[in-house]
Figure 1 (cartoon, helix red, strand yellow):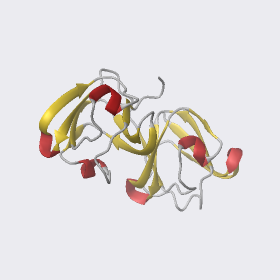
Figure 2 (spheres, one colour):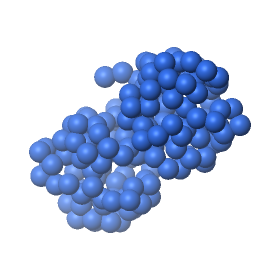
Figure 3 (cartoon, one colour):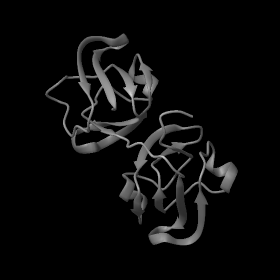
Figure 4 (cartoon, helix red, strand yellow):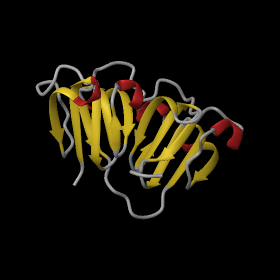
Length: 175
């Protein structure tokens, strides 16, 4: 069973709240979040309620302050468990909207999209297997976007403000 613990203060101090399922609004449990302990499962945490705003991928481990999960601030208002996936991972990325243009099929993590594929932009994507996290910058940095199985005809469908994807990885608990 998945389990995440949110702490109001850094270094696992202050008021805490434990979660084992998705929660669309954490506001009533704590006013700010400055550290997190993930005991099991990979999770996405979100800056705003209802899974909106900045997204952060966290896996099993300890995050003594928001910089350890690449947070921009101490606002965590919703969280989602990433379901365990036992099988292959597959993503199809397209150079144009609505699944047009050149298509590339992916099965592994990629720390630098431009070096590997000679492109910066991904305008649409189909995720037939597994769960993925896209990052705006190379080496798994910058804004993050969780993509579940499904079709994303435009980059705005996965919550991005730009088509720039610098890196991506499979949403797994370990690497």
